[in-house]
Length: 113
Ligand SMILES: [Zn+2]
Image 1 (cartoon, helix red, strand yellow):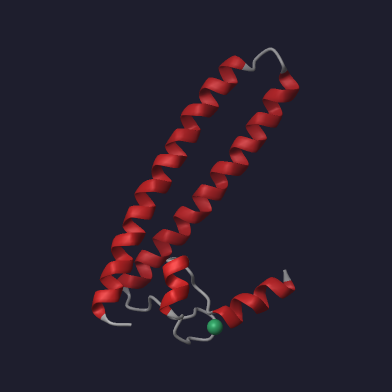
Image 2: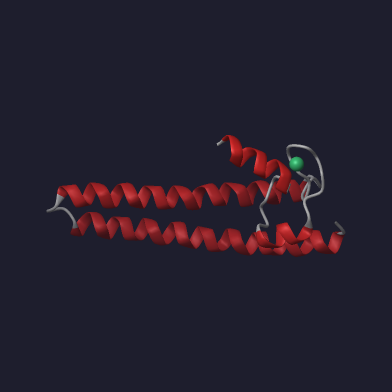
């Protein structure tokens, strides 16, 4: 991967990071309102809270992945598979800019999950 490609991915990742931060913020705002409204019905309140925390932990996982990808750009290991060290194909990174495994290693992981 050349410098220009890396710069492009860096830009995308930074944009993505900002978007995820907005989503997390959004959810935190919502969960406050939901708690205030759902005080009467405790069961649905608990359910809503659980669902809310699951959703934001998803975003937080993505945020961590994006931050790790940005760190790999800094360390110049971006675009390399963390498992086998092979180059991750650019089209794959275009779909998943924070991919850390090549397709082969990803498939292996999914098989044993
Ligand atoms: Zn690999």
